[in-house]
Length: 184
Image 1 (cartoon, rainbow, N blue to C red):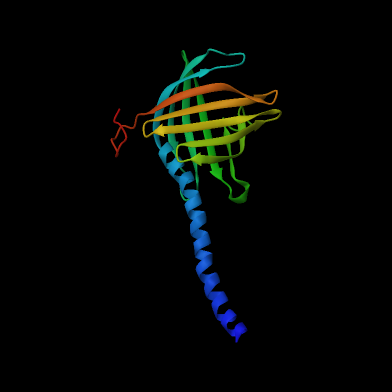
Image 2: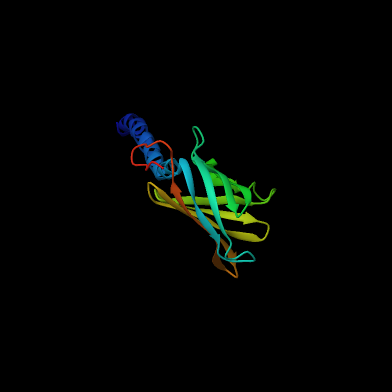
């Protein structure tokens, strides 16, 4: 009798528990999707190299933020200007299943940039990615404290300590007013 009850109850328990487990995973991904959706739009603002050979160099950036269809991730694509010189800038990252987040900054280590080799969304306003190029390791952090501002910091590891090297303070300047997004 016990085995008959177990054989009836166990499949029902599994049938009920499995979707609940999937719902938990879906809710776990929500802060990630929420953060990446908040990056969508046009961003402009100043930045500065705050350490290294070019310390004190100020620049201005223009980015378009987008999210890939059907995937969890983001792309910031645009350029930064120093005086009369303009440099194309981009960062792209996607969640790659169990491997976590992967992507590149400025074309990755095969180009002139860095590989994004991991990271996580801390909460709906902040993400931290691990970056790497040969022996250079560090983090790229983006924080969106409100609908219309974003700060991006790139820090590298020097003698077991993270040293900020680039900082940007961006403002949203979408040309069309949408919800709580300010019109330019």
